[in-house]
Length: 278
Ligand code: NAD
Image (cartoon, rainbow, N blue to C red; front, top):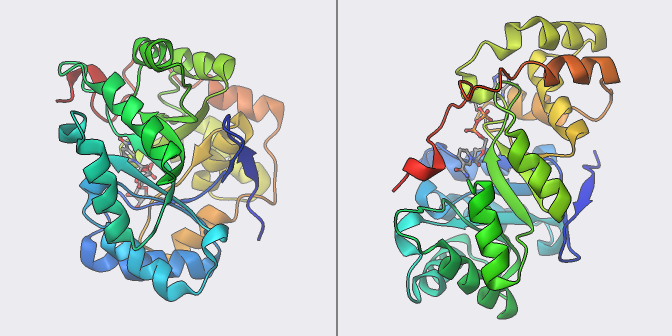
């Protein structure tokens, strides 16, 4: 199983599909990540706040997989944007992960009320220069946050990781990112199970016509849109199912039908609004 890689704007590349470990309990993480690596996943998305970086690190250490075949992302939490906190936070994450560098380090949320996200991103630029992370990016940034970061640091993030699924497509951010060479990572790619996405005709029909599951049809939609995805599951059969999405292609009409599912009124958002997270 070869997972396609996408180029990033800093010259490195990222496997387009990975495994996200949000809400994977700390004591289950080593097993789940080991299983994912065994099945063929090579890209793991974690965060300091998930409390499971040690489990990710233990699975990496026991996998025997060469470090340069793995792509590991972690994230700077919201209370550590100021002063030299990003330097301390990445050191703690690397220690827990048992790594000398991560492949991608993200500012997890902008927290505009504190107005420290430009400083935090400038610190990430230094961390990249110091070799502690290969690439740097942001998460949950809206267009005005992205514009400020680029204007004030002169550096364009490699990715913006945002909530994105067929019911909530964030087209303004996607358009900005496309114009500026920023890759979009879709979090909650399956709508976190909070919508009946799988029963929606555009998705169910596409799945039936390719003899795949609705989850596979949704993941395929993300991939064909050029988004990076890392669906979460702790069930081995679903880990396999979610990786098995490279043997079929949705038609343009099927993509267009799924594109049409977002009512564009913001009602599809499952998570918090980035301006309201503190
Ligand atoms: P998701 O859309 O991947 O949904 C996960 C849910 O879908 C789980 O309940 C799982 O049981 C179910 N599921 C998984 N595979 C399935 C399948 N094949 N068939 C049916 N159901 C299936 O949502 P998520 O876990 O929130 O998002 C994915 C990853 O994104 C996270 O693990 C995390 O790494 C990242 N994330 C980032 C942020 C952020 O603020 N940056 C926020 C949330 C999640």
